[in-house]
Each structure stands twice: as structure tokens, then as C-alpha cells.
Length: 261
Ligand SMILES: O=C(O)c1ccccc1NCC(=O)[C@H](O)[C@H](O)COP(=O)(O)O
Image (cartoon, rainbow, N blue to C red; front, top):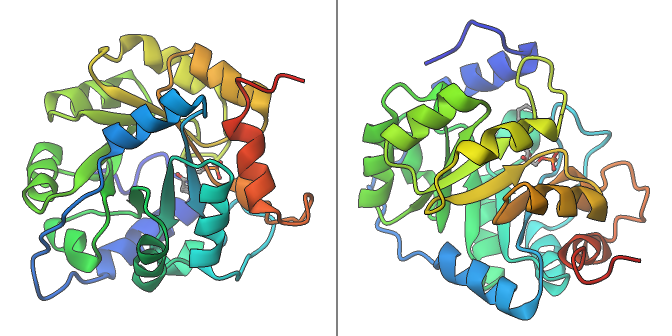
């Protein structure tokens, strides 16, 4: 696992906290909502498949939103979101397992657990339909992927470059996210997705992550091959530039391919 290399101080701190967090007493047995079917439904409806993220704050956010996570998620679904991502990391993102439980009970779309899962016991914190594994931070990606699937989770493996993509493919990942955020400087660059996407096999579900703000960004990522897009900040609007209307912010992105005005 990469812990000391070229990483922002906040990311090193996130990893330290993650390493100290325990697991749970029982091994989970999840009955997941299908991500593939949710994507098919969105495409059939003419909605851009957006995974909208309940992200109270983050090291790069301009503020904190303390709204009820379940209400936020319902508003995102009303705006056309295909799935919901919920941060469960507590110390840097304001997330919690309870938030994810509440969200999953309040919506009927798949819910992604967004966290820094480093070892098998971390998987058992809370049920979700999809769990994130970050290729760079996991020692035995194939082993953790298998452990997650054994519990019933679908797995999103996050990569940032070609080498991490190869690691993910060798481990058997079927859903891959390319993170446009560079974890050394925490800057986003949509060219990251554009440079990695052509090397992803067609049978992999491909997700563009981070830094997607506008309908033009959505169209750009879709043209580069994204089957779905993970969006947090532009929907949460921590700075309150859009009156915090997450339904409208989600709708602006889910309609990006039909409303080009
Ligand atoms: O968002 C951050 O500030 C951040 C900092 C350090 C590590 C990870 C971080 N974000 C995690 C994510 O993957 C994003 O929340 C997600 O991709 C959505 O990104 P965005 O739409 O840019 O909020």
C-alpha cells in the first residue's frame, strides 16, 4: 500500500485515520440493487447516468453542509440521479455509516459506499450496493475484491493512471472509476479520464470521477467514453452559489445531453 509517497498531507491523514478505524463484529451478507440495471434504466429514459454524492465536506470543499443525508439523496433522485454515493469517512468528509443506512432506506436506487477501505474488516461497517476500493491504497486488490464480492457487494475500483488501470484489470475489476483528482496536489484535470479511458476494455463499466461541474463537462466525459459520472461538489454546492438546490443541480447534469441550451 502506498502511504508515504507523493500524497497530499490531508490524504496521508485520511489514510492514517482509515488504518485506525476498526471493522465490525459480523461479516455482512448484502442483497445489492443492480448498478448495471440502474444504468440501463437511465439510458432508456434519456438521463445521463449520474452518481450523485452526499458529501458533507472534504479537504477541498468551500464549506460544510449539515443537511439530512436522506433528504439530500431523495432530492438527488428527484433530479434524475441514477445512483447515490455516500461518504462514510468521518474525520475529513463528515460522513458516517448511519448516513449511508438512512440514505439506502430512503431511496430505491443503488447506493455506493465512498470511503477508504484498506482491509477486509473495513468492508463490514455498513451494507451498500456498491463499495469503493482505491487501487493505489490496497495491498491485495484481487483478494479484497473477492472478499467484497463474497459479501454480495458490487465493487467500484478507482484508478488514476494506466498502471493502476492494469492493476485493476488484473485483479478482475468489472466496474472501474477514473479519478480526475490527483491525490498529490488535489487538483482536478478532466484530461486524466480522457487519457485512461481509451485503454479500458469495452466490457468494463467505466465511471468518470471528480471535477465534473457543468453540462459541458458531462458531455466531454461522455464523449470520452464514460458510462456514468460521479459528481459531488457541483451538486452539493458547499459555497451556496446555487442556494444549495441539489435537485436542480443534479437535473442540470442529468439533462446535459438532451438540454444543450
Ligand atoms: O474531494 C476531496 O477533496 C478529496 C480529497 C482527498 C481525497 C479524496 C477526495 N475526494 C473523494 C472523491 O472521490 C470525490 O468526493 C468524488 O469523486 C466527487 O468529486 P467532486 O465531484 O469533485 O466533488
